[in-house]
Image (cartoon, rainbow, N blue to C red):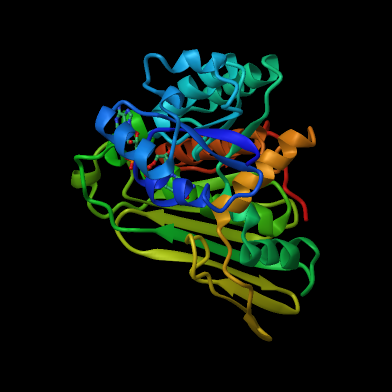
Length: 338
Ligand code: NAD
């Protein structure tokens, strides 16, 4: 059955995606849960045949250190809780997967990385698209300059969200608005397609209904400067729908739309359709991490990658607030090269 995974936080993503994916993994399996809701614990124990000794709540979670059936703790809580639970998991001697965004503040990322390093445990970020074939193809086309140098890229991820009863519109818990939630995918696809780190950016808060969104942005537009002069932009929003990556290179172009969904991704180049079979992204992501642990290799999507993206996110908010471009000097130097 491989390594035992404990999911922390049994909300929408854990329930809808991660638990079902853990029924399709080969190198790891759902061994435990951490939840503040006893009724959820009962139904999960029944549905997934979880041993009752592998059920924890947020208070007794640290006792997981004594449980050798749990190898990996997967933190799927609201963003502001990631840092605390990643650090507690590392201190309990477990390898950790942390959902995106890694934290709500850049400074927290280093504490999370340090805690895992000190415990000699691996830290991975829930960047599922690094295991998705259409996105891997976009990386290959861009990074290997299959159609020449990239001239322009445009990425967008947005969905309408107006439910204030949930944490995603709460600045304290979410850390921000759509940028934290889905814009992070557009940042990522821009960087992994180009295989370069941006050197500066200019962000503009283009929220339409400011009165409603209040402390978090409703819509944001960002232009990046890259060392090779690529004209790169992205947009994220809770006020509209979008899900794409479009790239223009010297000798051709390609596009993914939808680019970032769990399934049903579609791609095309100027020559025709990009066709890949559907995969379970989360199963591949978790199996890859389990393999990295078993082979003692760095995670494919390691903590420093999440830290790099939090650096960029902080700079996007800084630029939007100041209304002027900001330098990305000091950006963590990490790239996923294919
Ligand atoms: P959700 O609101 O559906 O679930 C959050 C869970 O945290 C719930 O079970 C809730 O009970 C629990 N929780 C514990 N303390 C809480 C508190 N004080 N306030 C609110 N909830 C509390 O959220 P979700 O969509 O499952 O997102 C969880 C994390 O997963 C987020 O960081 C999100 O960005 C990430 N996520 C990633 C993907 C992906 O594709 N990688 C997709 C969805 C969500």
